[in-house]
Image (cartoon, rainbow, N blue to C red; front, side):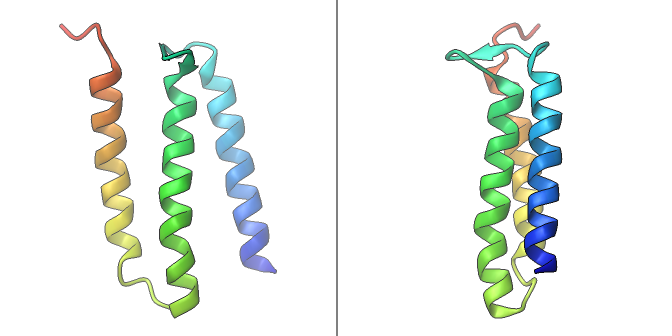
Length: 84
């Protein structure tokens, strides 16, 4: 029950964060980039969280966090068409 509540709180705060920043964000194919990046990070983290909970192990969960950070940075970099 506690894990489900944590998931709901984190998802809600992330969605609120993306919504607040989305108004000033650049669009990519009609959607604010911030919304896409927050959704991507949540999806990747949830996908890696499920096996971690089932196996009661954090073996690959930390590396997934690093992967998410690097991939979000690269996505943000390459979706910005106004690079100097």
